Image (cartoon, rainbow, N blue to C red; front, side, top):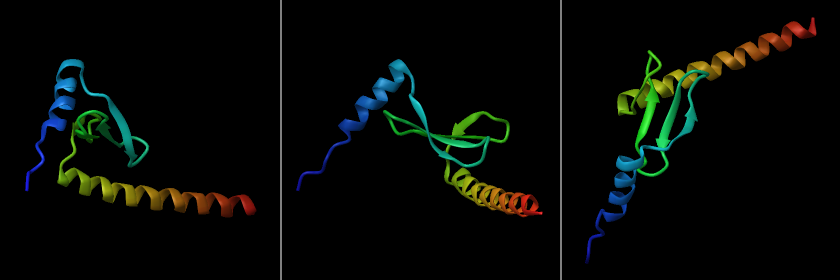
Length: 88
């Protein structure tokens, strides 16, 4: 059985080294924190606590998951509070 080679991934990496990455937002964690992926080489980045883009490691994936859970619950709680206060 012949193993597939990694040549298809070489071309996008070469493209990015010449022209730069083309990052697109793949996930909005909170209003300020997002996850980005390069459309060519699939490199993943996220925003750190200082607002800079850093590589998305498993540690930051876990942090982003927890932040997203906290953020969505807070937004839902505020929606309920706003709805309840508008009724009165």
